[in-house]
Length: 57
Image (cartoon, rainbow, N blue to C red):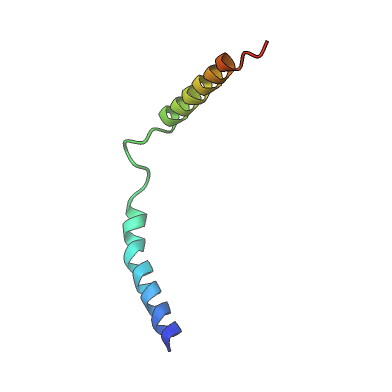
């Protein structure tokens, strides 16, 4: 009996959240190219720092 009520509660939550999720779409402030360029710049900076600190010879 509890599994049935838990299943009903889950479907009710899913039915409630589904319209909210389907109306969204990509967020206007998130720019994929900007995020990718920022991540690349951060990784290149970390690579440069690592190579500067690793002067064994």
